[in-house]
Image 1 (cartoon, rainbow, N blue to C red):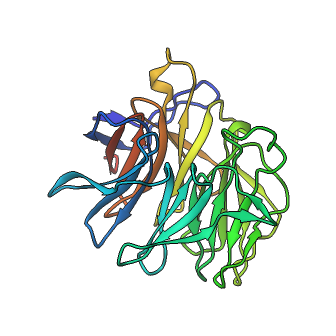
Image 2 (cartoon, rainbow, N blue to C red):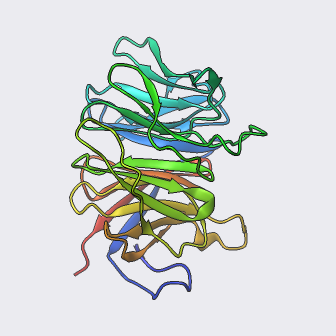
Image 3 (cartoon, one colour):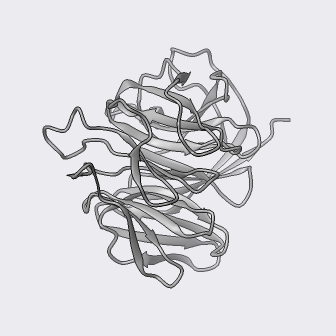
Length: 291
């Protein structure tokens, strides 16, 4: 059992709740992109370096879900329960249809290829939003955008400006706010989303003062709190990796330490269960209210 504690001196120490952290999977190469899949009763996640997607369930444990993923990274389900994946090596975003075929949703913009699609979320009217940082692509520093695939298939810029390593992305439960982690700038931005799926370029910083690199994030399905995957490149600070929690209004709540290089997080079967990818492992975190 752990306490959710502030891991850095920029914040006052905060105890939010008791949590239980379990390691479910280990020995993979570099895990990312967990997504809870209700019809499977488990979590699909990526092993980027192995270019595979895995499925973990309580009943059967770990199994390969997709043998060749194009070095898949972030994953999300659309409104019909179909899996959408950012394929970094193939520079595209795809959707797996129910029968298993792959549909390409985006592989370029304005005649140019994408960089390295990283993370993805969906909107209330069916739009798909994804981040496209320049990881592994030289000379693309000014072309790191957040894109939107409209329901009719058109790919547009969701926001006009290029970011410094846009990474994790998530939608609020009501579909009215798009959250983007700007990883190397160490902040999370919130953007209003209109009913037609367009995004207003009126950002509000909702997580500031972070001295770590931001990766993926998840939004609590009830409270709207932000659960941010953070890591440091300093291997001598193992307790500085994990999930930092902010309220939807930007108030720091605390941190859940996770061993390894924490990359992403999703909520699972209920609002008290998190699945976290870190290093070559998959963790489950059970949140329990403080007495």
